[in-house]
Amino acid sequence: MNALTNEEKKVLLLLLSSETGAASPEALASGDMVAVAIHRASLGLASRGFITIEESVKTTLRITNEGEELRSVIPERAVAEAIRATGGTSAYLDELAIDKRLSGIALGWLKKRQWAEMEKEGGRMRVTLTEPAIEALGRPSPLQDALERIATEVVMLEEVDASIVSDLKSRKAIEMRTERTRTLVLTDAARAVDPASIIIREEVTQLTPDLVRNGRWKDVQFKRFDVSVPVKPLYPGKKQPYLAFLDSLKAQFVALGFQEMRGPLIETEFWNFDALFQPQNHPARDWTDTYRLISPKQGRLPDDGTVEAVKRSHESSWKYVWDPEKARNLMPRAHGTCLSARQLHAGVSLPGKYFSIARCFRPDVLDRTHLIEFNQIEGIICDESLTFRNLLGVLKQFAEEIAGARQVRFYPDYYPFTEPSVQMSAKHPDLGWVEFGGAGIFRSELTRPLGVEEPVIAWGLGVDRLAMFKLGIDDIRYLFSDDITWLRREVMM
Image (tube, rainbow, N blue to C red; front, side, top):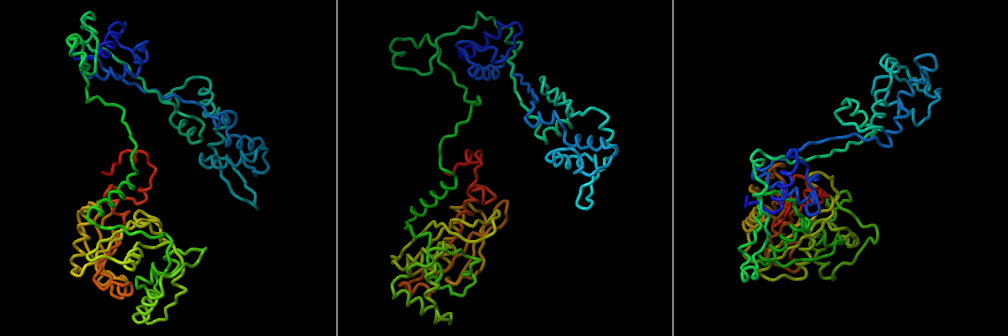
């Protein structure tokens, strides 16, 4: 008994004083004991075997505005009665004295109930009643009978035939209200307790210096807390999981000594393609694979020396006449690699490590692994001693440590700006093998016109797909979900 809190003792006394030894929290509520406090105390009493908590669920039916209309007239019944009023079992729909809106609704229900056969004759709809319809017209409508009861008295869900409830719900004629009732019932052990033995003493939650100095700590009761009792969850403010992942990703690169690269969202074709040694007749530069800016259409090229060096590289290797006007065209950047080109042109240190989390835009079909607006993690490392094996090691470590992938594999691939080139994929538990992106060693035809002679390993990986692995989701669109349950639960450490 001494283990009970004051609230629990008060609830126990209230139940012991009741005639039946059972009551709801709302019935026990008084001036100093609100229902919420009684609910909380009842959990403690139940865990110690003093009471049992019995729950009952009651579902009642309520009529809606649509139900009030059905209470007056059932569309399919009204049409069927109008046909019978003509003296036969068949009539053209436009001959009936029925509101057009009502007849339009009725046709679907006549067909669904198999009350009529319909066929068009010369642009007019002929409706022929079936035997079930004729039989139904000979007795009151069960739907209207049910609606009449629901509108005039309290009707429980189980009191109405399930098929009628289903029909009324599909017509939005009724609403269901569910009430959950809890009853606190004394156990046999609790009924044997003498109320006089329940002593309520001053209860404190914290031992203060004053209580120690004046000796009152001997007379008070320290409140016990049961940490196993379920409580209402709290949802403190936090960053959206995907944004938190991007911040974590950036922090890891900075911690590894990488410098961040920045650049505009709207890019010229020169930096997006030409500086990356991608020929101007490459299929990826077609409007079906990249977006174009309508206005303004063109931007500025860099200094003449750089433009001339890129032009010579294209014309000597790809054997075509390079067009500076095409290079001026503006576009939302299609990949983050354009930032690497800008960084090489601006100058890099040796050794040097650079990264960027770049927002990119590319026409695509939206599905579980593709978006038309996405993030890409772009990275380059510059040093005289770099080899292709260094690149594979960096990519594997990246996929395992940052994305949490357990199985990684590489495929030979082709990109105009790297040689050799590789594609990296990782195995998702639900989707199977998912492509992360491409990588390789920048070709000298790219680096030399931008003023760099040393080897540069580079990669461009889909950040959104990395986040799918880290956050344990199987649909890339869910990164931008408004599912409040997932947003509250998911925590990106």
